[in-house]
Image 1 (cartoon, rainbow, N blue to C red):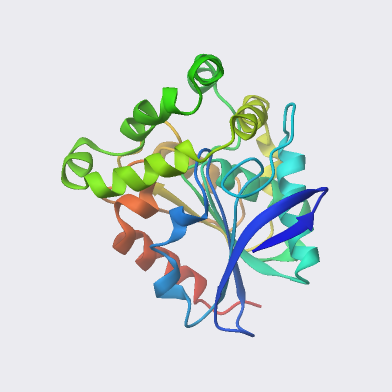
Image 2 (cartoon, rainbow, N blue to C red; image 1 turned 180 degrees about the vertical axis):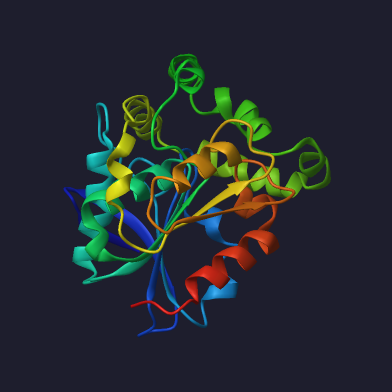
Length: 265
């Protein structure tokens, strides 16, 4: 499905029970809506599910130049307005997790709850240093130039050996990313600095990490964020690295489903 929102053409998917509470999933960098395929079956009986491709990713239009998180947040809000979604649970991983944090800072009134996964609120030097080289590789050789190294970074060794079909599907997501979208989102990442602003978040919040995530949003980083958001909790999914919802969908779904099904005011 496609809709005009925030000045671009946004690709999205809607599934689940009509009239049920909305759950919105926002994709990570170099991912598309298929990254959430493992979550839809366990939620569709109880929720109306919206999956969004981030700007320049999957089927969503890319624009030239640097993106900011204000732009990415505006894409989500714009689609909600187009679809007349007043309030929704919000789940995002990586880039989508940081987008979700930013949206919650200024627009908690639009949220039923917040689930940022494997993400950060502030860019750090150890991460900032890797992005320029990746951008140069894509400029020289397209998304193919980084597809394999990215897949290797996102999962544990044991999982990669045992699940070549899953790695193939993730490679497809990476290769389907528009380079302009990749460059734009990297620029947003490099300027990421929500800092203490996340103290403004005023909805039920669950941080989820992959226990084996070493870089994107490690458990230690997510636990630190918990202390800044009133009433927030953190759960680390075992046997999972950065893309924890794909590597251990059963563990992720149990944590997410339990949280989303809690009564909401």
